[in-house]
Image (cartoon, rainbow, N blue to C red; front, side, top):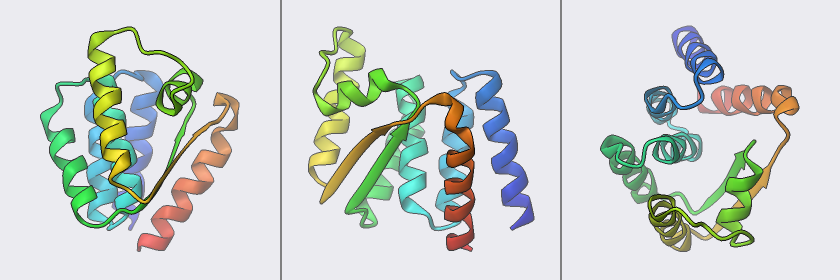
Amino acid sequence: MGRHEDARRHYEVALVAEPTLAEAAYNLGSLYDDLGNVAQATLWYRRALEIRPDYADAHFNLASALERGVDELEVVSDSELLVRQMRGEYKVKSPTLRELVDEAQGLAGRLGSVRYTAVRREHNELADRLVNEALDSAG
């Protein structure tokens, strides 16, 4: 588990330093997928798609995660805009983002339950604890 934990930490540091690094988000999805944590894998694959919509591997892996039986998902984001757009509270003007939102909402409709939660960026310690709990329960 030590190597997975080290890799997770490095990917998260990379995303803090460069939040638009789709590859780091995708690699976090792959890491959680390897650990059997489909819900967290799905979250990170979606994040990779938000960053770079043409990221084909993320599309493939998101579909794969859903195919393996995710029926309940909580999407936690420090982007209140994203959360409000996904809830349908704000309109999405960008055609590229509109396509992504439509796709995500279509996928969400296939799940039993999807909840979108916005958290303040200052609450990273909660996110860290949740990530660690998810890793511990997967191992």
